[in-house]
Image 1 (cartoon, one colour):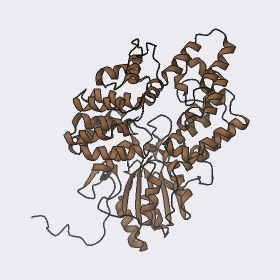
Image 2 (spheres, helix red, strand yellow):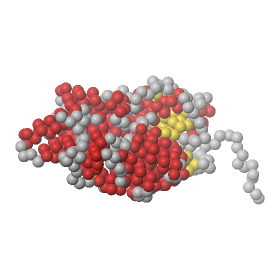
Image 3 (cartoon, helix red, strand yellow):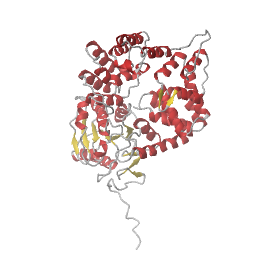
Length: 540
């Protein structure tokens, strides 16, 4: 007897367990559940903002990096010009916490992109590769992908040629070497043209060649002079005189940075007093907070000066300080010891308060959507993963969720794994207190359908569900997109679902066919504004 041809024709709603395929366009995630695939530009944006450092809970760093890197390489080969546009947009807006993924993708364009893509990459190279450190990282990636082709050589040469002598000297002195590369190595590979006596003297200095100007005198251009003067001071034997000498050198050369000074100078409080008076860039200040604390500098008016700078909106914006960098700084500084090394310090509470405030300030002004919002945070076992060894995916999700909670007047904030519970966290509580609350909290296996199931069962009205997750859902008896459909039918509310991915995988619970579902990358500085705008109905 043949199978009944009408046996699969249905008009009633059906549901599918998460370990079964509900639609042909679904794929299996790393936990064995069926979800949707993130592809194209959305996956590129995830890579650029989340990176692959540390892998994920289910996938080793090496395997994860290989999978995502191959996607980037293929995208660079097939859509190189568009990739360059994305790199420039994300880099200049400061949307990514780390520049390594952007620099890798840029190197991929030079290695695999077509002629048009390479021309585009050269045109914006100096806008993306802004510092010597970024140049060294880019060159290291370029070497491992292909090597020195004509386009690459021209781009790197233009980095040196486009700067005037003083700006170039700043880069040469402040960022001297990294990733196994020095400026001497790069100059020998790129062959930039000096274009004048000042740069010729600088290139000679970098390469260790004796150099004289046309007037016959030894040449130190721009910041090479103060740098060499600091080296001479380090040879002095009078320790008392040294303390004042380093400080005087800094005061007489406004703009001098700590990287231009010998290590010895950085152990002297007077040196840092002079650097603070001259104005330490905001990113450097954040990194040096433990050192400044140990040196006893953060007291009185000096403490007020530092805490005011940390919360200065203009400095945070101009310094492209990503919120996640502040999250790292807050967690590290608050615990009183580094995650690597043996340094310890006693946290200053006013500094902790300033870092907490700076985190929220760094997102800029987010306009409330004014919608009834359920913030649902995945706290399953896989969210305990910490790719960088500092902040877990759950802690990162907490920090991002706090911004939405602080913005929206009508919200609930819940946690889920295989259970669904209210979380003891609040935007009216300090961020570091909320992080401590969530740090060791896990609710078992992952079921991303629970926010919608819970809301339907309890007859609660929400316009928007915001789910922070790694998308490794598998434990539910209903697919998340089906649970949202049932919620809409039961309540008559055409609710939206925003999925904030906390790892750079290719998975999402958001249905790509549903215009009222949005997938975004966590740790993107624009995410809170995207959430608010989508919830409000500005797009989609």
